Length: 188
Image (cartoon, helix red, strand yellow):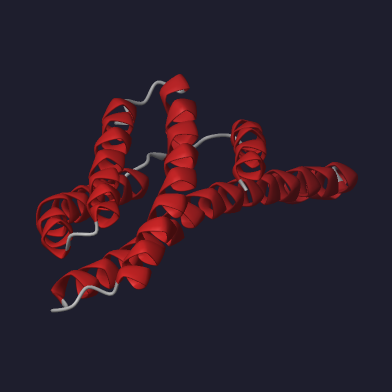
């Protein structure tokens, strides 16, 4: 009974409280959607990298190496991976600032080891020896694939298990995006 009286008496206040609730809810949904867009983008990039891994494995299984396709796939992977790792590193930096332990050092080490593997394959291609290319693909190619798959599964687990309290704010992610954008434009 008291509730009815209060609601009738506070008719205007009820509307403003309802408006505040809606705005807060929309802000939360908007923030969550934006964060999920960033994380969704990273996950989509993982899917793209996995497709390229399948392509690389198919090239490695062929009797005769298709050099133009091999070079194309390696360049596509390295270009995608460079921007992808930059993005992940910046997102992890934001998460670390919020107090979460992230594998940022592991990410940096992976970057170096992945680059070494790809560079070894490119050196073998430059040698002109099918034997060296095949040997490099068996050793460095398999190492590259294994490392990249491990990286993807580790990152997917982190983003799936990310607690709500550690979710980066809209402003933090904006700064991440602004830092990423100039980097992407400079490299093109």
